[in-house]
Length: 115
Image (tube, rainbow, N blue to C red):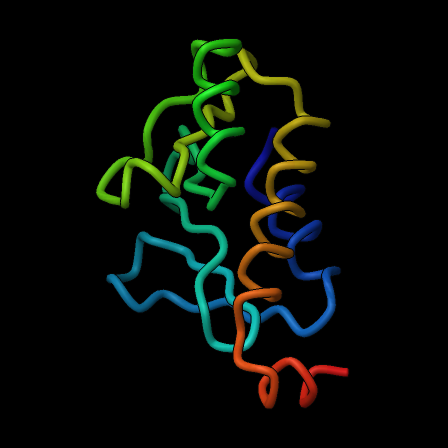
């Protein structure tokens, strides 16, 4: 998985923005102002994605490339390797799931403004 491919996928999701609030090397994708994915721009070893807590545990048991979120809430976030030990299709599925979890958690007024 390349950063360019992942970036294009995320930016194709409705109402997604990107920025670098934690410095020039950490890229963040947001929906409704809330982060759903973040990663290092320079070498893209993994991406942090929000996940349902039960599924997060299942994924960590199934894939050695999925670990508790680095510098994140370990219950709600996973660090997902982008170096081949997690299928690219799963990485994109998990990005979409993270996006949807964040979008669904937005206040109704914000969600309505995204329609």
